[in-house]
Length: 114
Length: 115
Image (cartoon, rainbow over all chains, first blue to last red; front, side, top):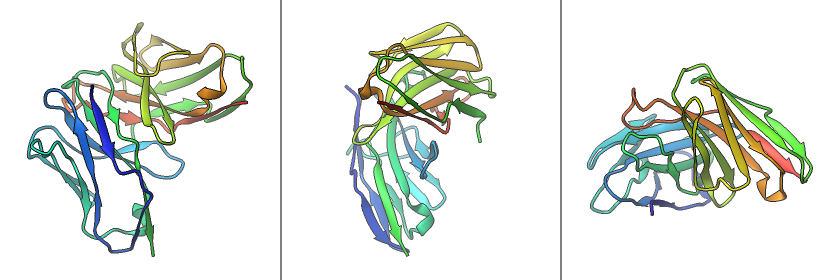
């Protein structure tokens, strides 16, 4: 079946450090890939997305590249801020534009210390 | 922000009682979803709807039912709540006809505690 694997954390970094959160997936076909972010007490917000191999999604200084050969979609940011502290979810859509729901990883709790 | 509200935002109930959670949207999106979020599990799909009166089961549908009588409302019912249904419930919407990437927009969540 379809699945997403990501490091759960917590991941603790100092402000201005480089961030990588790994995400790998298992899916048939060519899913679309997403990163969502959840701030404390809130719902999920889409951070970035990619729909095909070698696409790079980017937003708010975060980037992720869809790597079909390694079935990965790692999230990176060059210099994190305290305000980036949140839970980050990697997700895939296997229905190819349909509506069968998203498959999520377990989430990575990121803590940025000043 | 997408116009999605959930009610109630918090609820404490007892085992065996029925509970209904409501999701309301003002975006006129065709698809609506209910997920539950639990530590160590991420989000898991309970049920979804692809139109008025059209619903289907997700990964963890046992013990839950849904109804959608209007485009804007999607109800999740726990017929007889159990402690294993203590969770945070999120509603989401999407409109695949306008976004081939099936981007979903999430509500603020409902925290349900079953004692």
